[in-house]
Image 1: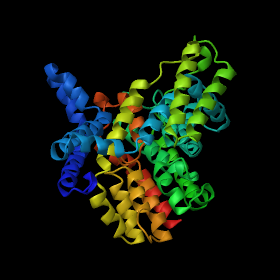
Image 2 (image 1 turned 30 degrees about the horizontal axis):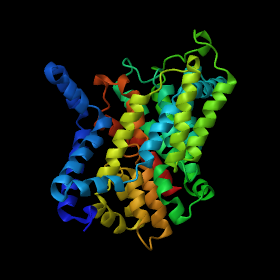
Image 3 (image 1 turned 120 degrees about the vertical axis):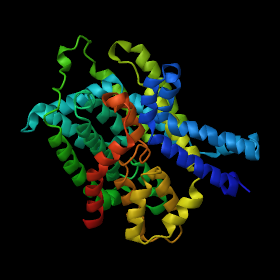
Image 4 (image 1 turned 90 degrees about the horizontal axis):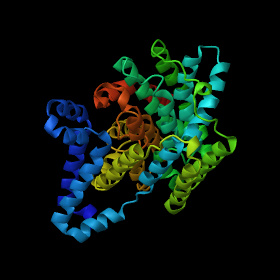
Length: 421
């Protein structure tokens, strides 16, 4: 009997998964507890880091497996999981957030913003919420989330901006990134899980899901930008900065590093090698760099690795739900289940079902990507957005309830488009 099929361990893993979800929804309370208990504030701050949650409970799971089945079995289970996605997200976050990449994107957004017939701050925010998520179909969703979050942070996610405005913008960003990667077959994790099994190429994605997603992304960005219009900060002008100008060859090198990592996203030996070369390159030309976001990226990777460990033990109850629903019910089920489990894990379970109809395939993936902005764990890039934007919120934490409410309208619009169009 394997670890995944052991009834006792299945129940233990389900309980721990539920506790991890409850912990995710309670991080604000831990941050507030830190203020009232200075002696243990460090521990409460640690427990209040949403990126720590699933990694922490995954460690508890491994300890439980070791106690029930032995240390060798626990190690064997941990080593049987595929950690390519957590490693990829770590690497792509660090590279995408490097100063030359952000400089290139910022320059492009500023040039495009001047062409739009609206004030530049408004145009800049709209492009960050619309065009960057759609760019995720080329550079992958984690890279798009990282770039969009860093573009929006100084302009919108600041303490003086009302919380409801920030949560609406955050919900729109998360939903837009989740659906914005569906124009191709390799950029969105839930699509990637089924693309080869179901023979879905980029043309299929564009014709069946992509164009609908692009329409909703533009609408969501427009609504969020309109609501935030009176709170947007002016766009910083790089020409006034005291830093030396970044040579074009440095920017090109960073773009090539990012492109190489994206191309070899499923080959960790290759993209980790490229990452080591990237680190050496940044040291060689440190005058043109900002501090790399190693800490934030490591926390996000820890979160996703924990989700991989805990999620691997949830198939016994998730798969019967997915396989027992009719297409429209499957869409609603996928939309709801995505809020409590990673949408890529959900579509992966669907890919294991034999004889599933084409309509059910579409509904499963559509529901999974539509619900990708409802919670932090719903879509792999979301923890990256949280890590980069949480300092702009009260208590420097993003509440699960606020995110759920902020993402509600963008999610409903995405769901309506995928079902009705």
